[in-house]
Length: 226
Image 1: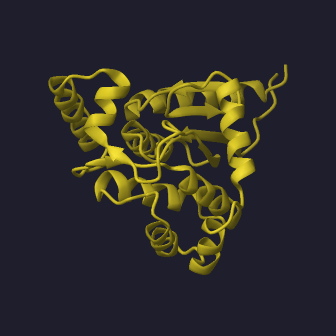
Image 2: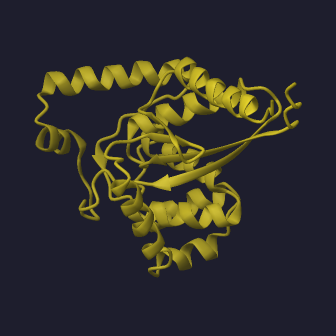
């Protein structure tokens, strides 16, 4: 006879992503919608983890079309097709992409995100940064812009300014980035469940939901004792 499972089911999620990654904006929106469909007894512990698509990006950024053509060898036609696909997938999950002309260095944004996790506002800041860049074409390398975004989600502007003016959290962010690279993460978003299950890419809501339900069911079944 099996024991009755515990009332609450813990679920840890590590969302490895970059601020300037469009599929990360799509993936986060889809993942959150999938999580909202899970049973009410699932307790989610959500961590935003750093990954830089372009760690060597200059502080002044780069024209996004030139960057994609140089990095991936994409033709103008491929760029247009890719943008149309991203726009459509964003619309499916309620994320509206704006006209982004440049891409930026995101290391300082990741430092703020680490601090926001300590301050209990990490997911709020992540959403706001994705909206600022992908929706509003803001420069997410600019310190004044980052401070405003942080303040808008309830973080202390003076503390944010001080962090950005220093190297605070630089070492821990770099260490986290290297950990995930060593773990085999080379593209984002990467959604790691309970530090053992990997879901790669900006999947549709239904794909995330199915995977999450299977993992939750396995945890519940595993709690039983013959």
